[in-house]
Length: 94
Image 1: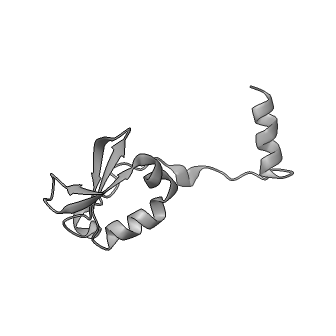
Image 2: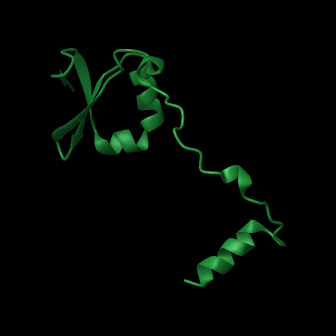
């Protein structure tokens, strides 16, 4: 079943959210290749998945940190045993 994508006015495939959940890798690959999907929840359209209008590198803005927290001054410690054992002990104290 296809329907009109109201955002981009292209033909979109309609899929239930369960299909998106179960097949997300394949669906996102199709989106990367230009497909558009209308996602429904209990038959009601809730989202449109479509390729971005520009590359991700154009959308991302990386800002340098404005403050230094001094993490380089923290001294390292040696721990006996495995970290998993230590975490199990800590979780048991809750």
